[in-house]
Length: 218
Image 1: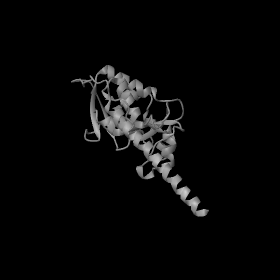
Image 2: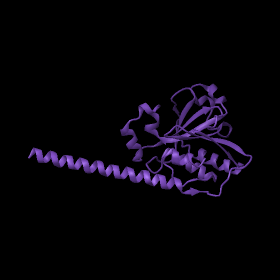
Image 3: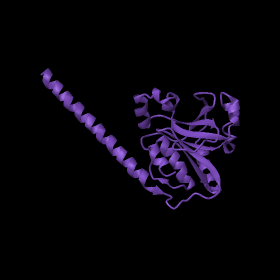
Image 4: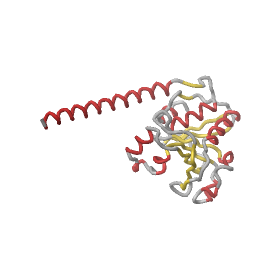
């Protein structure tokens, strides 16, 4: 009797693992297809305009924009070190509140927090860092936008701030703010970045839950 129960349990566990694997595979395939379908396909960068950057840490992407257009929302005194406010750029990342605040490095990743975030069960935050103008490279792409395109991107980011008290960042040069929208497997941090670029008019994949789907177009 016990042996038969163990056999059934193993079979159930195997089916569960196979089912989860199938779901993950379908998700990855959908991400590949979605990121390969262009939106704003005719867009081309202008010869002159406003310079922005998109940064990729391998899992997460940030929009890096001039600080001046957010001076009324991200103030020097919001940083633990107010001198950070003198930096010319602001890095904006969006994500799940619980995961973001409790995962300062990828060594701190907790699978339970990941699953909870992907299930869309929490609120979101904007992570804002003060930074110098970055050097373009494999993980940092430089992008020039027309003034009207840049204005749409700025409006997108500004509209992402929600009312509420700011939250202390990981260090002296960053801070968290309450954000609008819900994080889920369909609406990830990278899709937030891509949505802003699509709203600006930049050529971008239709659905980009992973950073490669964003960076391939830049």
